[in-house]
Image 1 (cartoon, one colour):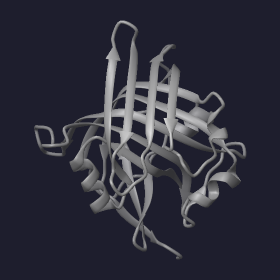
Image 2 (tube, one colour):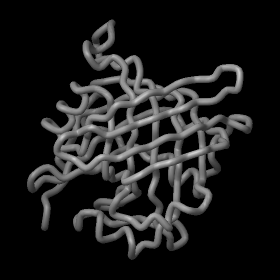
Image 3 (cartoon, one colour):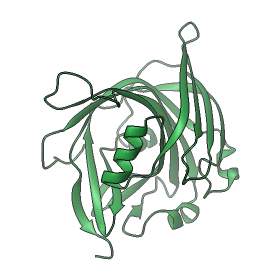
Length: 243
């Protein structure tokens, strides 16, 4: 479970039609791309990299009855791996693509998170219970990247078994990032994931440019979540670089 945050939650968001796409990657291939203060975690000796598309919906601040203007809803696509810092497991993000100018500008300026503007769409085929997600990065100071996924759930909803790979990948309750010489922790909280196995058709180009394409040629581990309500807590300074 997540460690107790220092302050009450400050914002709420719903993650709709979220897909976890996980690929195993050799530790030695991924370690050079994770900042030195962080320990790259492995499961049975293997590191993992994940791509996660979803709709961030119903965004609101604590104490406000309505949604946040300009960022009430936006699409997001992130690339992440799994790390440990000072004994606590979390997530490290290589990139976030989003179709909201306000979300991109705010995250880059305030938290130094690698958000980038993209043209994105999500279409739902209710009859086939299928989601089509497209993203084309258009950030001026970043290389272009393309992503397309067609996915649908194919199993009943279940919770991941404690100790399983799926539980290790999904049940993470903070992100770590570096801003200047400070190590920041962004806690989140939500109920345990209710996941479904999913069928996936995926195409991507330059979304993970620092790894050879051969690592993405094998069938990934895929899980779908219809909706998850999440609470975000204030970022905390938890360390300093080189200390």
